[in-house]
Length: 453
Image (cartoon, one colour):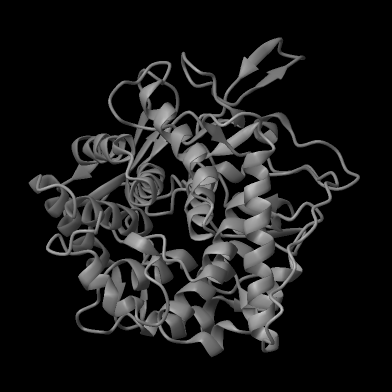
C-alpha cells in the first residue's frame, strides 16, 4: 500500500475509490486429501488447495500463453460493477504475490505468465526506459509488442480519459515485490530474462530512491504522471524489508557490490525502526525522511522483518506478542492497532509468520477464519466487514485518514492466504519452509550459499 504520509507501506492508494460491490462467478474447490487430518490441518489444506486452484484458473481464463496481469478486485454478487479506476486495474504488488503463490502451488507455467507481464511492464513502458515499473497496469493479456497499457477510465461527463496518479507512479516497495517474483521465477525456470530484469529494476531502486540523510534508507518512490512525478521522501520499514530481501537474493547470483551495500542499508534502517520499549517496529519516517513516524502501528511492518531479515539478537520475536495484543480482533488480525475489523491479508501474513517461527498451534485458529472469507468465485474478501479503517491517508492530496479496506474479493488477500497455507516464505529463495525458516534465513540469503542449478 503506497501511503504518502511518511513511512506508510506502498499498497494504500490502490484501495482508493473502492465503493462498488461484486458479481457471482462460481468456482468448484479442489477436494481435500483423503488422508485423515486434524480439523486445523484440514482447514489449512482446504485453503491451500482451493486457493491454488483459484489462482491457476485466473491465469488460465486469459487466452493464450503470453504475458498477463490479473485484476486485483472483483465486483460483488448481484451488485453494481466496479467503478472505472478499479474495473481493469491489475496492481503490481497483488500480481507479484499471486505469481509467487503459484510457484508455491507448483504452477510455474501460470506464474511465468505473470512474471512475463512484469518483464513487459519494465521493458515496454510508454515513457520510461530506466528499469522502473508502474504501480498498476490494465488487467488481462498484454499486447505482443508496443507499450503495455495502463488502467484508466472514460468520464462521459468530462468527455475525458482519466488515469489514477498512484497507478501510473512507482512505489519502491512495488518494484521490490515485482523483483521478488522474477527471482522466484528464475529459480523455478532458470530463464535468464527474469534475473536480468530483476537486476535492472533494483539498479533503478539503488540509483533513484536511496537517501543518505539519517536514518539512511530507500524512500517511498514517485507519485504521479510522467515526465515529472512527485518524489516521495518518506521512508518505510516495509519498503526496506522488501529491498533487503531482493538485494540479498541478488547477491547470491551476482558479485556486484551494489547488492550487498543495498541490503546492508535496508537492514540498518529496519533495525533503527525497532522500538524495544514496545516490542514492535515503527512504520518509518515522516515526509522529511528524518523524523520518526512512531504513532501508527501497521501489522505488516511488524511482522515481515521476522521472516525476511536475520535477527542476531533474537529480540524481534517480541513483535508477535505486540501483534496479537494490539492488532488481534475477532480471532484474526486487523491492519492497525485497536482495529475495527479483520484484515484478511494481514491475517494470512500472521499465519505464515507464526508457522515460520515454530508456532503452528497459534496459526491453527486462523485457517477457519481465512477459509470463511472465500467468495463464490474462490477469491478471498479483503475484510469480512463492510469497511475497515487503517488510520492512514491514501495520498499526498488527502486531508483526512481516508484509506479503508472494503468487503470485496481481493487478489492480494487470496495470495497471502495461499502462501501461508503452503508455508512458502516469499522473501526467501525456495520459499524457506516451516519452523526452521528463521535459521535458514541466514544461510539461504548468503552469497556463499549459491543455489543449485
